[in-house]
Image (cartoon, rainbow, N blue to C red; front, side):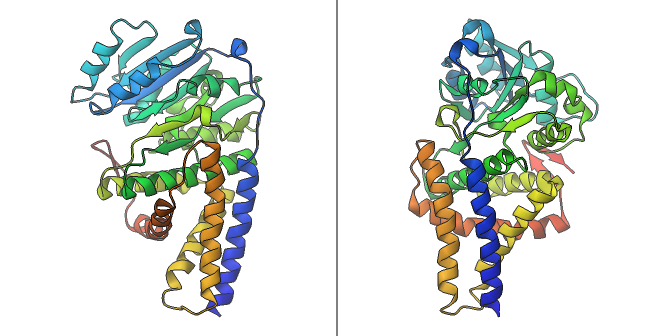
Length: 365
């Protein structure tokens, strides 16, 4: 009986994965370099003295028409040397601007308030955001901007990987690619369920059309909230190309505690997913629950089902790694499979008892 249930669950999981693969494989037209729209890049930073210099050094190397690019660095009331490091680096660089997030906007707080304050100073058509613990390729902004081929394209997302230095960071990087490939697939079939703010762009005019962050219900995942608000307009295109020229690299969580808080924040933000997103999450939950329960109901018939689930995941993300110019470490992939089972099953249970989020030394309830 257990084998039959497991087979049904894995079949459903495979169908969902196949649909996502189709969406993630989509390609989109692009503008030539001389047709690029003007861009404002916004980075919100709080207590990022260990990371901010590397981030802004990579932004300084961007290949983009000088007259069409501005970079706004928002110091989110840092208590370390983040602000000083920014000031020293941008002193002689005219396309950089630093502001401090002090202006209140409704009930906004934290990073969302910082980004909203940054957008208020933005003078260009396209807003692109990344995080202070990220580095970008020289072609990053140019490639994202190239997808705004007409006024109907409102939001373009990019892929993010993580520095792969050991098994712990390696499994997180595989997880990032898995989750963002899923986000790409669902967005490109018209059923958005997630995105990531460290590689996200949108038209400033459409941002204003939905009322900006101050008009949206506050969320600890502001990127997801904006994505869904734009989607609800039902008049614009939202796309998520898997393109190595727009790849961003971030730093993995260094401790289990930090990783737990990150996953919890994302999970709380994802509670407002649309029905299609909820079904996909449910399919992943059940598939991984079956893998865990197979320990207690083990039989020879279970082995091919376990193998099929793992192979499905591998052939889902392996081509994405190749397309992004990344190498998929098989050992890290196996660590990811175990880790994925643990948090996909545990997090829904945790959220039953508490939804308090701790992030950047702040608490959100």
